[in-house]
Amino acid sequence: MQHYDYVIVGAGFAGSVLAERLASQAGKTILLIDKRSHIGGNAYDCLNEDGILIHQYGPHIFHTNSPEVFAYLSQFTEWRPYEHRVLASVDGKLLPIPINLDTVNQLYGYSFTSEELADYFKSVGEPVEDIRTSEDVVVSQVGRDLYEKFFRGYTRKQWGVDPSQLDKMVTSRIPTRTNQDDRYFTDEFQYMPLQGYTKMFEKMVDQPCIHQLLSTDFKEVKDQLSFDELIYTGPVDEYFDYCYGKLPYRSLRFDHQTLDVADYQPVSVVNYPNDHAYTRITEYKKLTGQEHPKTSITFEYPQDEGDPYYPVPRPENAALYRRYKQLADEQPSVHFVGRLGTYRYYNMDQVVAQALTLYKKLVGIESLQEAVKS
Ligand code: FAD
Ligand code: UDP
Image 1 (cartoon, rainbow, N blue to C red):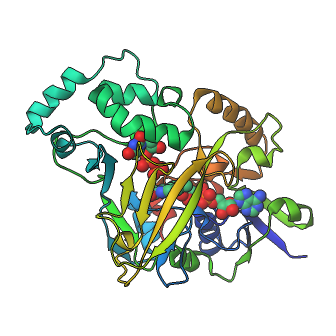
Image 2 (spheres, helix red, strand yellow):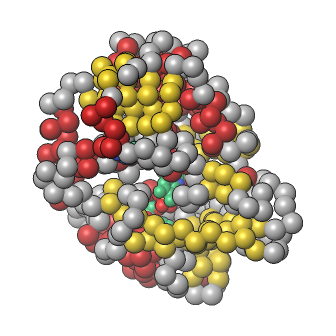
Image 3 (cartoon, rainbow, N blue to C red):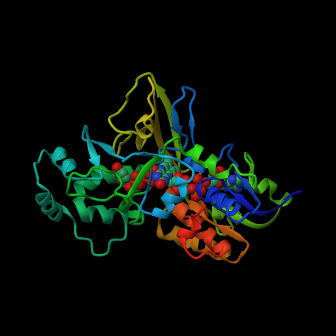
């Protein structure tokens, strides 16, 4: 049986970045395991039966303020400039979300200037002394009516609980604006990988020192493996056999459809805060720029059962995670990283940064700039 320097569980961003760095820069031998039949984790994309590039696990838009993360990934892909814009279906209208000047004017038929809108938000915003929950964040900024129209229903569907039961970080992801900026993100770097995410992952992990073992659950093979260190990017509670109980994760069901029309909706993502059981519809061609006579869309239906997609940010879950983290810290040769390994609601760029930081620690490099060099 071959001995490996590292076994890495999970071939998503966390596992693939670490495999790539440790193999290409430190000459380590790696066994990269994933229970799915493909690399890329939740960012996996593929051509569907009609030849349209779709994201198997929902829309993934890359954005970051980190020059190091951007420089690192740029070694493996070219980019397509793309600024994400989202509309929300509210009261029979498609309105910009994040809420901005046009959202309010079009919703209520006002003709506010930015200054007037700022005054309006002050007048309708509810004073909240200590902003703790996802409800507090929104009602304090834009008042109850906008909260109920844009946030309350969406959040209840997405998370299965009321925003008043969720940490403030969830709705804090969405800013409020008094200008007409309708971009979903304001990060310095906003791009899509030109040939897709999976092609980028292939370039990262197709190396002689990295052996891939797909369609394999680590649990099933761990006793047969010989290795020095383990990097684990699956759910941390599962690794410890749920000894303190299950950490809650929210899942999704994706309904992928191909339609015999070239164009379905005005932007790549339309949110449905109040109507329907799904939260949003994504039209991929508008993300990828692909030209095709048909179009592919995906409906997202939130649910409890299924693959763990979202850690649920609530104080009691954070407390339970801390107990698992303590166990994890007692295992010097096992390293937990990634959205599931550290129970963090992280975007792709944050996971890449987290993985690069672990790489630095493993090989004793000081700076992130040095860690991303080839
Ligand atoms: P994952 O991608 O989940 O990879 C973990 C891998 O481990 C999986 O492939 C899993 O199969 C494997 N695994 C787990 N347990 C085992 C085991 N026992 N044995 C073998 N393999 C195992 N981020 C953005 O920046 N922009 C976006 O627009 C965006 N949109 C998103 C939309 C959705 C619907 C979701 C769910 C997430 C989105 N994200 C987005 C977040 C992004 O998906 C994550 O930040 C990123 O993919 C996390 O990478 P990871 O490697 O930590 O985890
Ligand atoms: N949200 C909402 N209405 C919207 C968009 C977002 O209530 O139209 C809330 C909801 O709770 C969501 C959170 O803001 O889960 C974060 O939104 P984001 O688009 O960042 O979610 P993700 O892409 O991670 O699913």
